[in-house]
Length: 145
Image 1 (spheres, rainbow, N blue to C red):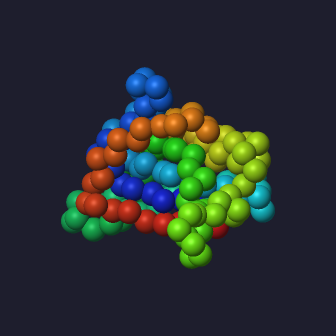
Image 2 (cartoon, one colour; image 1 turned 180 degrees about the vertical axis):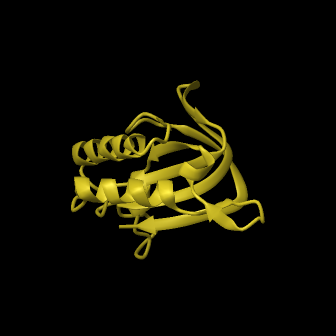
Image 3 (cartoon, rainbow, N blue to C red; image 1 turned 45 degrees about the vertical axis):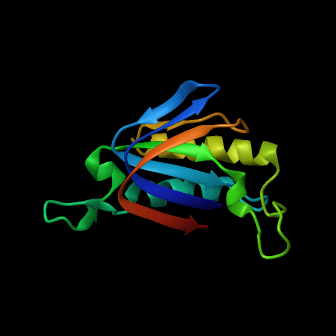
């Protein structure tokens, strides 16, 4: 499982011109699932991301988590995070999970985030989406499991 996370002031995702998910301060998480990933990986990733201390405390240090600030998460499925560009000019997506498996684990991930008391919004799995991100910092991290 691979996530690219961005600390955001706000983020939203549109499908066919309609807002499907929107958050204020919090995280935008682009998430990819591999065939070998399990429900345990989804739970691990949810726990890692909601508790990752990347929000400023009163001294301006990154000491607060998404849970600590009462923030929300916009989760967007993105199999292209497993694109392999090392050979040729066209990425290979052989490392990305089967769509049915990936969709199931994406839903497991969102449920695990909600279980931890964080509001989670999302786009539509497999749809063409427009993701609007107001990156705060900017802070962008890659988290692999």
